[in-house]
Length: 315
Image (cartoon, rainbow, N blue to C red; front, side, top):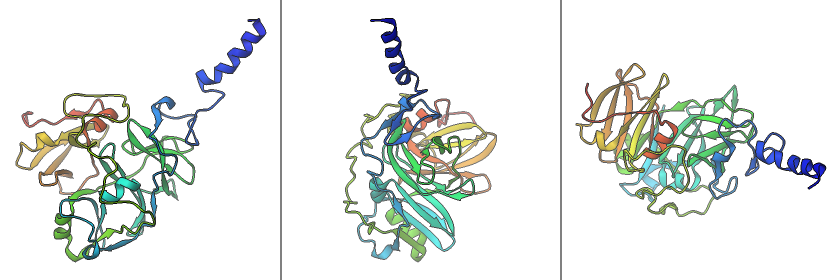
């Protein structure tokens, strides 16, 4: 090949190799300047908004929500007037619900691949964002995007990883994981539940993920793996002052349901409920703290340096 042609061929391949000239685009999102390797952001299958997020969702009294069975799981949030429940049966199909609680715009998010239900403030940098499902994943976890800037946001990472808001963090709120019957008994008449009248035709009694929750198989690659526990073992993950810690449910099951511990110099209490199962993180004062209930693989791949609670650890 002549030198001139060789140089032209080099120029044509250079953008592909470096990404400096031809920016990587996936599902229509510009990944230039991404805070993670663009090749680690992969398609989950559906296109952008192929999984439709809910906006301005409606709620009904729990007495008329006849679809749900006693053992069905809901994410619940306390409000000034009572409690609000978001059934996982609905979130499996929509993953995001843009809601407003006590006048504050919030985002309810659920990633079926990671078992993570998390709630965030939607008020970011003095503006209210609305979120959609990008159809992309990072470390097998849901990547959300905001309609205002088209930045991509990592759910477990709780920050924007690409786009104009890259590096911006989301404020996380506490959330409970409860059985439908137990939630109804706890809140009485002061509870409302997300309506299944979403505007979409979905079978909310059926999970589109089959037996995924129990299989060792991961559908998508992750950057870090650990065989310390089954990949789908549930853990409670907490972060404080740069320190991360996981409380695996098999370890909590060996206790009487209450564990006094420390993270980042903070005294905390973990309450474990084997009937769900679920765990919640509290300050020693009794304040419910934001935490992440997740599959072990998901917590570990985002926090490979995590400390891990074991029942036989010294006090």
